[in-house]
Length: 231
Image 1 (cartoon, one colour):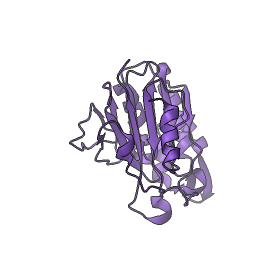
Image 2 (cartoon, rainbow, N blue to C red):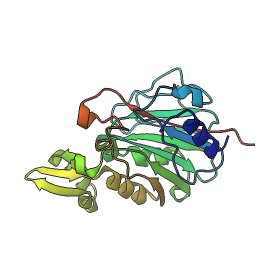
Image 3 (cartoon, rainbow, N blue to C red):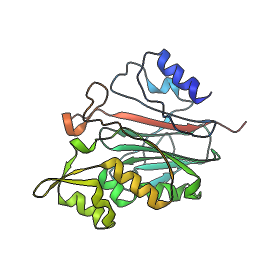
């Protein structure tokens, strides 16, 4: 199945789910659900998804088991037809694949996990030269809606003074944080130079996305990623 055929299946089902537009190798597939469902995502997957017990941390699990839900916020696999998954509703899903299509990774990147190194840890767990890794940034809360305090700003700027560019003053002790810009900075610092996606704000698009910050909802979108066996 090609990425185009997956996107066509999603459209044919009348869904506005997101099929990432990125130069992933042949055989690597992904999609992200939106709030407009009505069809089980499992109908589009080659196997039951390996879901995580997400704790806003930086732990990465390798070769996850679909029958378990390990406490982690990222996963990688070198095996075909293992479906990696994360749930999001303002935090950013980040997908990874190496240029050969031999290993994939997925991360749930909220500000806490990102500051703790979940993106860098996922790249390291893939055991590939970062310059040979593609990354795709999914929908997340945008800068205009993500007001934060000094704890968030300090978590990033304390480790990298250049991160201050991702924060805009709004009033004393409060800033607007650009989660996407922070992700791009951290990926670039880790050596990933092929970064795609982004520019989708969950908080400002209530017709399409769930947003915890906007609605206080417990409902989530879900990102799925897998690779086919080599032919």
